Length: 311
Ligand SMILES: NC(=O)c1ccc[n+]([C@@H]2O[C@H](COP(=O)([O-])OP(=O)(O)OC[C@H]3O[C@@H](n4cnc5c(N)ncnc54)[C@H](O)[C@@H]3O)[C@@H](O)[C@H]2O)c1
Image: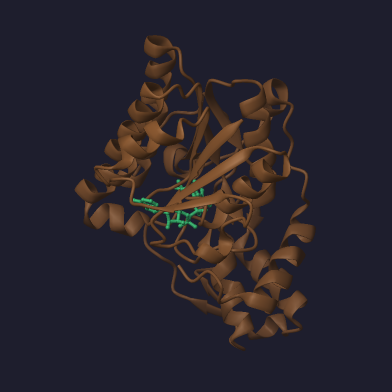
């Protein structure tokens, strides 16, 4: 199958593109390289450097005629979305709709969208499933939720097999430091530069850390099943930031006593954790990589080439 991966030069999109190539698909990566890097693009994929908002996008999609589009390109910085919600909506909503329209006009039958559990469900008091109230607290989350809803409408109105995968906090090799789970990359880069990690507040705030290649498997399963609807992708396990910092210090051979605590950030989410049960039941997906293993692989990558993807 011919698959167009937007954002395929970025962190998660490049892992997804790698998997598609490994499965024997023809892959075209579209990316403007704003936060991505051409070094991340799989050498067996075709690469088009283009902005999603480029007026030439429909003509390009019409020429490529992809059967599936995996949409990972986005404005990913929550702070930018708060400072400039119009720009955020242009990239994360309007450009996405133009991409879907262009795809439908040229025979696209499947669409997978990189959505976000953390940005849509808000504060957690336990595992959040897909029925959890949707309470986005910033324009970035509103945009993700809007596209999730548009895809539901496209399924009904136009028969598009489109699904939204709501990720928890993703980490792994090639991660930049501005995305939702940038803390792993931030700590890795600090340790690589010989500095101790700086933990905000008491460090007992939790996140559900998901290893990026595990997402690539979920995308593959969703494509094969022509999935529609919303699926949480997470581990269902909460890890606190202090434990993360200690785990990385251990791997870097740094005394955890060197970890620095800075004042807490006002309004920062205290707990975040997704219930991946629906993805297990309907896509047969499970997060395969234990946190200790994923952290080791991530640190190995950053300690070798952590500057390759500076976001
Ligand atoms: N990292 C996480 O924890 C996380 C969690 C939930 C959802 N997501 C979503 O997953 C997707 C990938 O995120 P990531 O962490 O890999 O970020 P990333 O910045 O590494 O990847 C995004 C890619 O999109 C490209 N891009 C951005 N705007 C573009 C535009 N206008 N035109 C063309 N290309 C453009 C960038 O150059 C980059 O290569 C995003 O949609 C993000 O919102 C990420």
